[in-house]
Length: 461
Image (cartoon, rainbow, N blue to C red; front, side, top):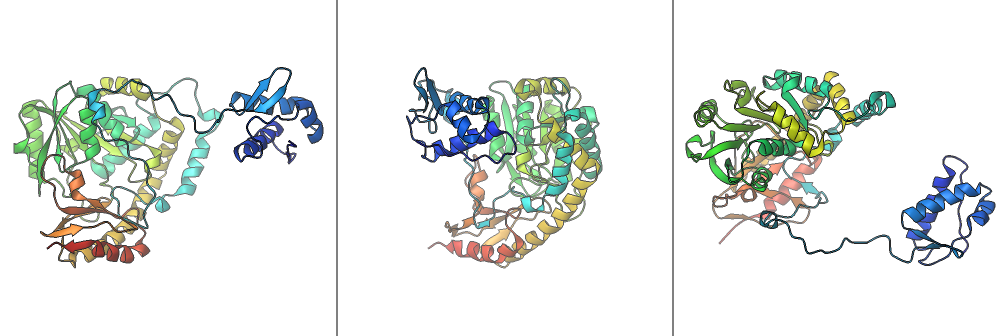
């Protein structure tokens, strides 16, 4: 077959030949088993060096798209390159992993997207971020070898200052460890502290990925009821040595833990020689008075590990989080981080350090808070007018919760993405309610989205 390749005369000529031949193979213009022109002939047609064509052919052979036959020429591979699958195999994971729910595939956003915990990417200052990342992607910004498992020093310093001012967290740069999101922070703490068969307490209802993670590490996970003041400390079982809580904005109900309950939890941890993981996942966005001090700032015995994330304030795709741990845990956590993935992307961490130091994070949070507050107000007003719903009070975060009146059910509606409260219940009877995020849905779409939500609610009987 006559192979058509057009060169622009700019850039890598071998790459141009490679790309155009690959496109011809993938779209069927070059069929399986078809013979390509000899390198000398194609080079003569294109008026380029034979070595240039040979490089393109060699790359296609190495990638499995072409096959060379001695004395016969070069042919399109007879075996399909795309769609190959690994052997089915007979190896099976441990029984624990066979009981785990499969990893959720990314879903296409709904027209009216009320999913919880999803920030608005349109608010992200992309131009500023691009400038900072480009500054770090220079040869002079890289060092030979691997970096510190705890993360970029500049970012650890920036985080310690930021959480010290914004959240009253007591930490220096050496107390901060950078992670790939909050989930890795929980994993590292679990690896360091959880013995097989140990009992770990989580909030009920609560954050399902934390519950599943602790189970995967061999823990026996128990749910502890949450009321209007936070986790019921008196209901924590006696054998628990690790408890996971979201005191600033309980997930998913949204209520903050009272000061009395915080004091009780810290006293319990001291008596039981236990550790408390404090997940402060989205409290930067506040719509009321200054929040109560974090557990970490009230802790005098060094029993609280503070976990934070940039997935809600910036973008989940950045995969940047951190933890602040007592000094007694720092060496083990650094070792666990090194064994897990050594360290994250240092150029990205360096860019975030400058982002914080230049005041761009604080500016972004102020701007995003104003936008989220407007969306939240519209949703709250609509829910409070509906007798079928009761809004759970909250003053922070990217979502709010509403309890369903007795006898009210929710039916799916095309174009509407909304989460049910019972999806966050692990042990207790399902709680009828909705968890409504306002990060992903644009403000102009809210009236129509709320009307559709109202139409999805109905009285039973």
